[in-house]
Image 1: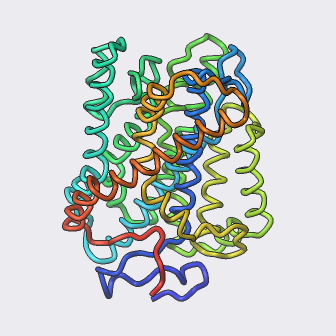
Image 2: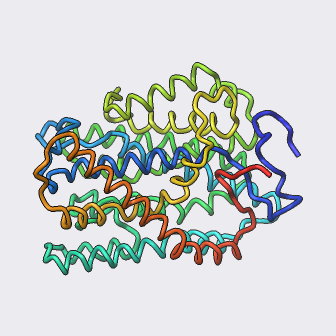
Length: 388
């Protein structure tokens, strides 16, 4: 068992496969991202409550602006996903060759039950309230390609956020095949792919600026596989105890700068160049992950019960909140109180409703599938857990 400071929190599962891999603080990052998405989408829907949706400003077209942390929160989700999936697969390779079929079964049991339940509820809602729907766009959602309608700006009502789930599921189609490579070859391949996709993004940016072709840049910006691969690279370097990577990513100054960056994103003040902002956020996410899992020069400890609770139900929060916003608006109608108390009421009721429904979904609907998932799991994960 390795005993360096960087991996002191990682048990040796080769001796005991039933003992979960312990990676502290990751649920806290999930919690931040999930809450940001809910708050941002609530802001954009304030008009349905008779309130001003422009409280965080507006874009160049005059449309209401939400929290930048919402879109960037999805980037954090992507980096986390790439990091955790890759790390667990490397731990699995310590015991036996990768069982790709089991991997796909695990992902299906985690994602699909709530995905398709909510999809059905969203379509029923559009039918019940006579909301226009482009029927041709239903199939991409059924076949886990929700990023396609999103890129074409033809997302169905209550389902525009599904684009990120489509991206993740598509990434999972090919990544297990890459993960079969030796860790060194996987690292080199991931770095090559990241470089290629970044160059491709710059080329697409040139096409848009020079010729007005928007779809190529939108496609690679939305379907950001390279962001997930950045999480993969971080996982490999962490697993290998790469000294330079650990020294840089956990340096106190670097950790402080990462949290300052996250604060600026929260305040809608983070912007360097639109073509690379997402990639910079991914770097920030990697630094924050390393600060949490190593506990070296940790500025803020996200390992607590509140973060753990929100993080565990974050998938449900992300999936269900658009419908909850709609139904709360249907129940309350336009508010006569347009003061601070009116805004406080809307944000509070939606956040509470989202957390409660997500908890009920996790406890009574998702958990049976998660228990079934364990039958196909070699390396169990516990992104946040109490020490014995």
